Image 1 (tube, rainbow, N blue to C red):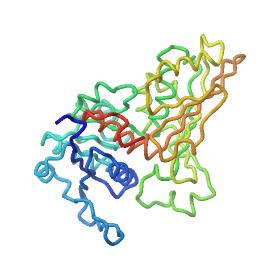
Image 2 (cartoon, helix red, strand yellow):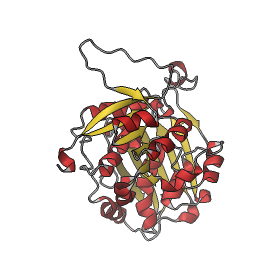
Image 3 (cartoon, rainbow, N blue to C red):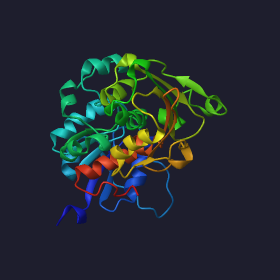
Image 4 (tube, helix red, strand yellow):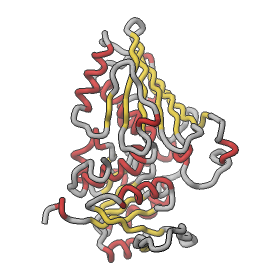
Amino acid sequence: MNNYSKRFSVGIAGFRGYSGAELVRILKHHPSVEAVLLEHREDSEGAPGPLGQKPAQVIPANAEAIAREKLDAVLLATPHHVSLELAGPILETGTRVIDLSGAFRLRDAETFSRWYKERHTRPELLAQAVYGLPEFYRESIREARFVANPGCYPTAANLALRPLLAAQVVDRSRGVICDAKSGISGAGRKASLKTSFCESAENFSAYGIVEHRHVPEVLQNSGLGEREFTFTAHLLPVTRGILETIYLRTERIEKAVDLLSIYEEAYENEPFVRLYAPGKVPDLRAVQHTNFCDIGFVFDAESRRAVIVAAEDNLVKGAAGQAVQNLNLMLGLPETEGLL
């Protein structure tokens, strides 16, 4: 039996959160995966469902139960402090793990402590975690036992910036500014005043100014230095979607088509990156409920300014969809399976 005809059992911890629920939705229609729900909270109550609907299997989110069920992989859609507790014991069972939190995205514990304002309790696992941005690290992901799924903001920022930085056409001395906006689901399901309806509806606000914890992910994977990059996150009064407007100055670029050719070479065979003609840019509607990241730009030849717009769904390409993309690679399945 080859991998394409086998059905894999995959656990989802944190299935009641927004990213976890998106995982459940995607895997429900995945032809090669059967989802098993992993309960990591003792005080949880199941969500109501219609009569006659067969509920998914639920087992405890512990190493013993996971080993007993012989799960092929586990997806941790949990807060980073929960992932720090669960990832190690699960990996010790031989089960593959994809972590959607920020617990293992950074390469060293000191950087984590600086940006997350707490001590990293499993620093020995950082070296094992492959950063799960398939467009850049596909071959490493295929061989990985442990993948750290990227953050939603860094996914769009790195996809927009890295090809230009690799081609050395960004005037880094002028700095790069990323003005990023996210739907409210990006803040997670846990109740808070800031994300309540009365506070967020008909409103627009900046947060995490200068010290947003996704900044080091962009720096780590783009090659930018901290002094070269300014990032500000904003909360949009919509449920889902991320739109980033990135401002930079170019070098050795004479025409808009020169920029486009760099992107086309980088993403020619990428199934989930879509490019727009020069002067055209994406919006949220183009990417909501999809695993696409859309990139467009406007270039002014006289000033050598480029304004790049990248859009994605924060719950799909920014979280659950990208996790399934990584899962497909790790299980030897077609990368697009269950996502197109």
